[in-house]
Image 1 (cartoon, rainbow, N blue to C red):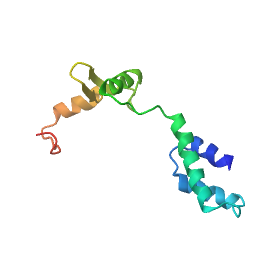
Image 2: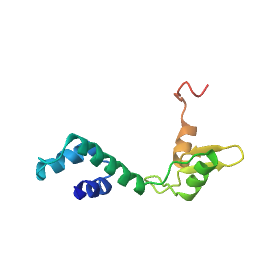
Image 3: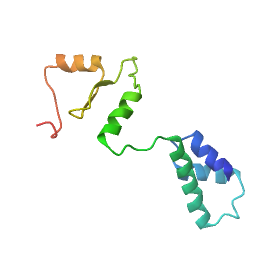
Length: 114
């Protein structure tokens, strides 16, 4: 069942249940118990968790993580427009999208923006 763990880390977007079903059609699964499936899924989640960075606990760690990562748009523009540590304000947008927003005559917004 090492192939399940390998498949889980190679294809991180695939659901664990789907990985199990795809492996079950290839290998003999007559010796696997229901309790084994629970442990196999847990091992897949743990293997994936080791690939990803830990979730930040504070707003400062979020801002530091955003500064260290260089996210780009499909056109190659920086996506982190503003990151102020003092006011804890973060703006994620590229300049071309902001220009289009400024040229728009009408804006539709969510109830969050009163």
